[in-house]
Amino acid sequence: MRICFVADARSPIARNWIRWFVQRGHSVCVISSYFAPADSIPGSELHCVPLFVNRFARIQHNGSMRSSGTSSIVSPLLAELRTGRLAEMLHAMKDWVAPLELRAHSKKYRKILGAFRPDIVHAMRIPYEGMMAAVAVDHSPFLISIWGNDLTLHATTSRLSAMLTRHSLDRADALHSDCTRDIRLASTEWGFAALKPTIVLPGGGGIQTDEFFPGRVTPQISSELGVHRGAPVVINPRGFRPGSVRSDTFFRAIPTVLRNRPDTVFIALGMANNPIAKRWIERYNVGASVRLLGRVSRDQMAELFRLAWINVSISEHDGLPNTLLESLACGAFPVVGDIESLREWIEDGVNGFLVPPDNPDAVAAAILRAIDDTELRRSAAAKNHRMIEARADHSKVMPLAEKFYADVIAYRKEAESRLSAGARS
Image (cartoon, rainbow, N blue to C red):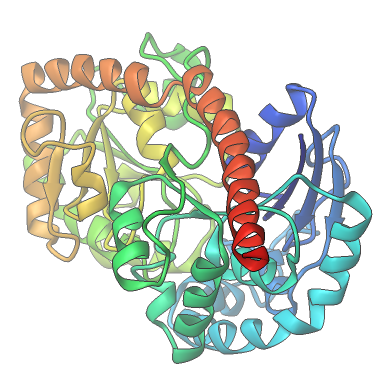
């Protein structure tokens, strides 16, 4: 197949999915909505056509610029813009400005698509890749993925975003989501025809179980993080995601946990040198128990999940986080926001805890109960391991995705044939 992906080529989740098709020998073109290095996805034809507002993505969560290894003198302001008090202003601006840019870029997209001549176009989320592809794709079968909060948050931010979301889903020939909730919402509330092909698969293509698995932790990582033997370890892998993940609830829960288990160590990823995180730590005087880390490699992520007793992911808008699957594969006990998409994987009190995203006392109580109940953590780890093997193993998920592409192409041909026959009659 000749496959064109419209995606963020920087995203590890998108790269993991796309790389599989390259390795299978398909001809792959990637139109990236962000600037990305030329070798981001080896073996693919990469075109970067970023929206103007996506240039803010060069600002990392710690306030530094991606092109520089050091923090700028305006680091606190930049971090606020990405993750703090100014974040809502930035997101509001993006939700209005980005859609207005779509038609301006449509000629570039059409030129790339015309030269590549794909058998199928796959936009890997709705805003703004799906919106862009919906405007630019003329003839090819068109598949959209829904990620995380595309429908529950982004689509509701403005009338323009809602209109373009409906147009994208109406235009799509098929839909992929990582949870059944979003398939239902797309067809009942956002204009996607229920008879069109759909599939529910993990958004990153599933878990490579040769990398993410339970086991012993190397002594070096415990030493580097200052984790004493036998100390409970709680990890928050989500970083700052304004509007989706309640980092404030996570930090507010820490003092209560420490009053009951002062030996607990908290690890927060994507927060190194972030002034917002530092403010929370200073407010509650918990610096000795919290480790703020930056971005980590896949190998390091797997090690951290094996080190962790508990994975805390307090979402209020989410699909199926890839980090949740990775943590389940490594045996960490999940404490997650009580939202519909996560109920598809977590049964409260059986293989994890579901907690109100805005309730730090409930989060602290769940963490403490998981720390104290060794047998619950052990039985949950066994159940979650079986669930990953059955529903999220990369070697099983991606052949299903490949077959779905073929089904979408066949569906589109059949639909065009019916339309042609109707016109002749």
